[in-house]
Length: 341
Image (cartoon, rainbow, N blue to C red):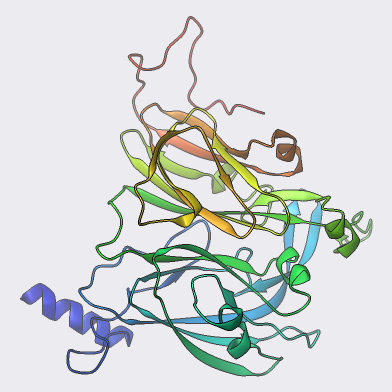
């Protein structure tokens, strides 16, 4: 009972809990959103809640790769936009604002929402406006969201997308670590030699000829000090989305067999087991669980392998004791060596 009172008190302080008898109750998690590659905490409550999310359309200069900048269109100043976590039966309450200096309207098309435009019809905002909408979350799954303002392909190609997890009743099997990874394409011309800024090319998008194919908005976003991390013996869950706008992803982790794959974001059907590479279409997603048994560096990539030269590469660093019973050879094994594809 003491734990219950602490939970309610914490919810009241956070402004997220409606007490029993006041409609939807037990509140949303401490935080319903997180920035890539992070994920909000697991949901621990006993009934549906109103999950409130603030999303602001903005323009921000991001680094696509070494020496190349890009004027991205963003939600909450990041590419991808924040990861949203809710549960089936919840109500998503989203407040949308627009700080785009160009004057362009923006909105939200949630693939998790049942209704015209996935919510785009009632979330369209011009600069300076604020609109709030509520949507019942009827289906569990891992869903893409993106800006649906016309021309929609330009809004997606410039960075306006993210993932939303709608947990099934009872949640998902517990894991040790969770990460948010989203693949996308950027279409641009030659960077300006004075500024290093590469300008968007609609024509390259029409040709489906991406300049870069990247994870989490940049070729270096999951490299070096920004690599994903784990320890041996842990199970890592990757919530993987593909914003496209054109190319399917053949997602692969070099040196790891995927223990469980919830394909197409389906969290109701039994997951596939022992998967080497999983296909994720544009506008689609998958949940991937990997058991980390051997220490070392594991490369995340799109196995349409030439795309690694366009940036579709990341690293999962696993620390822990060596496992010669599982992995050994007649050459010295150095776990810090990164395999290059």
